[in-house]
Structure formats: C-alpha cells, structure tokens
Image 1 (cartoon, rainbow, N blue to C red):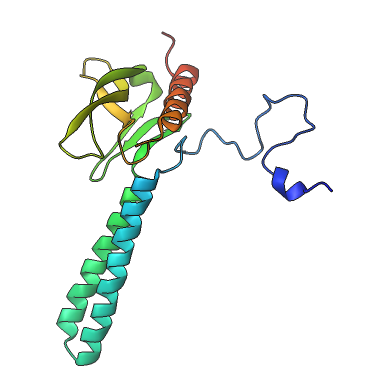
Image 2 (cartoon, rainbow, N blue to C red):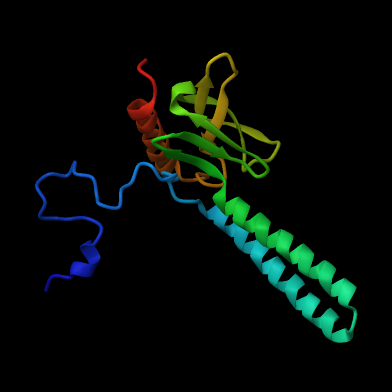
Length: 183
C-alpha cells in the first residue's frame, strides 16, 4: 500500500532530480542547516525560565504589587527575546548575499564582496565559550579584511555532528560558488 504523505517532499518517480522544487525560492533568506540540539536546548531552558518568571509575575500581581509584577514581565520578555535570538543565530544565505547572525549583531554581505569561502583546520571556540579546541571552521574571506569564522564543528549547531557540519559548509560554499563573483 503506497503512503503518499510520506513522499510529499520528494518525487520517487521523477527521472530528473535536478529540477528545483516549487517552494525553492532563492530570493528568501534561509539557513541551509537545522539548529543543533545545544542551541535548541539552551533556548528551551530560557523559555522555561521565562515561564517561571511569568508565574512569579502573576503571583506578585495578585498580591497587589503591580510595579514588581511589571518588572517580572519585563524580565520574562527579555528571556523570551533572548531565546528567539538564540534560535535565529547562524549563517543565512540567499541570492542577494550571506548573512551572519550573532547574539547581538547581524552582518549582511552581498556575494560581490565575498572573496572566498573555505573550510579550515584551526583552533575554534567550544560552544562559544572562551575555551578553544582544535576543529574545523567555515571561514569567510573579504577584500582587505581578516577572515571571519562563520561556522565551526564545535558550536551549538554542530557539536558531535561532524557530518552535519560538512553538509552545511559544502552547501554554503556551493551558494558562494553559484552567486559569488567570478574567481
């Protein structure tokens, strides 16, 4: 018995696998990999903490101390915004360029300014902490600037997932080869 709902994202009968899917729009910003378990777990812990703070705000509001409840709601809103930002962190690509989203900053670079994207063996930060270990990194080289590390195999997305890092780095390098300037 065929189960068509299991094959909704790919056509087994299609002879040509190079045809772009109808929802594959290269003008939209997309992260070519899934967020890793460490990143999702950290965001989940922040959301759990925000729920406890919101519960405390409700108790404080029922006790009659509205300024304290307002402060608790503000703190919970900061936790929720932080969790959403943690989930959004990473490297995003589109036909227009490359976007590197960090916790407190976002850098967008058009493909014309990208000189090279390469995978390098170098000391990398373990889960974004000050401790460094030897690992692989996807490095962005711009004209006249020092190289910028986009992804590492020891960050929150790829720790203990070397194959996922290789796929993500290859995908981002392929986007750079397709839309970057002629090298």
